[in-house]
Image (cartoon, rainbow, N blue to C red; front, top):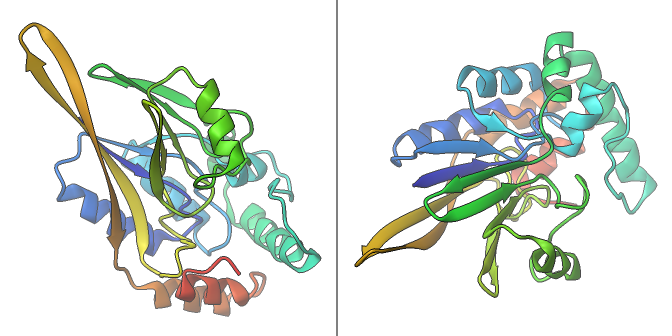
Length: 247
């Protein structure tokens, strides 16, 4: 079973389209999106409609929650007032640009998903199992605490915009990174593939798990220029896209 996990698209349809094309060539069985379809960039409706058209299993991100419920606050923990003001501008634009039908779609998304493949149970969340906007950064105290609590074999999250995977004992934590707004100091879109391989030994069945982080080139200048031409979104968002930066 080969599962492609995409996350944090943030209205960047150019990155999303290239990632989906890449996935088509990798013999994938199922695609799951761990949320934050909207926010930051210029095309929230198109991003939502691509996921809906392709019937991609999707859970709610904190931006999706805010826009679906007509809120200007995304719930992120911004360290300074400037970042908070930029986020509010993003929310204001996205609220205006997103259709009522697509807001209803965002509002109805589940906040988590549990799937079982072969003998492995996978739990999908956006932030963490505790909060939709909690960051499970690599090697963090929060990650260790959450992984001690889960009963599933694998936990998949997004929200940090940085892909990684790490074992906590026999349990695996996978962060799907970001399609539309990576924070890897690299503008390339990224996503993750989990490959659960089953082998039969006499009458017993066991699974081996492989995780791959995939980078995809796309025309990031196209979305950066659209942001700069927008009258509401901060131009600094274009720089973040070009640099693959968080600051």
